[in-house]
Length: 189
Image (cartoon, rainbow, N blue to C red; front, side):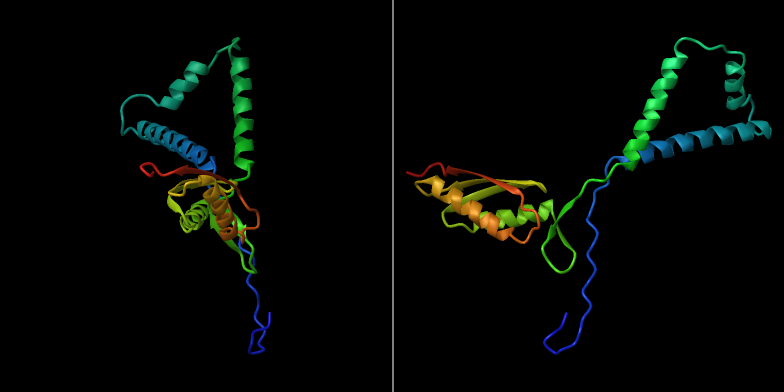
């Protein structure tokens, strides 16, 4: 890139797409709790074997109860269910995390969050002549604008709002679908 002074500047690298957490942290927290519980059992058993606590070790008791058990009918379906659960957890862990932003058309890596899209759409709709109030909800894929107008024909405002929102969000690489609902403000004659 050449500036007005004739110097060459390096362009910035594209930023990575912002992503959400997904469900992996939930399973990570559950796994951590399980490991902590196993650690507590291990420490308790170590204290019992060191003679600092009275009683017998929980691991030893569990092994004694399982010793000599034969295969029972419920064990095969339980094992299959645990195998399926394990595969499901692997699939969840490898799944892509949800995207949180939409790329803005620019030479640098700029993304706009759903909240940013909502704010821009709300400002664009509020700037339309004849619009009294606006409520906007937005996701990465769609925007819903609810507006009230004091115009005698709300259909006029509906098209102007849609054009204004599209114009304001024209810098996005993938434009969300815009739905507009306009009502006439109550109390007007």
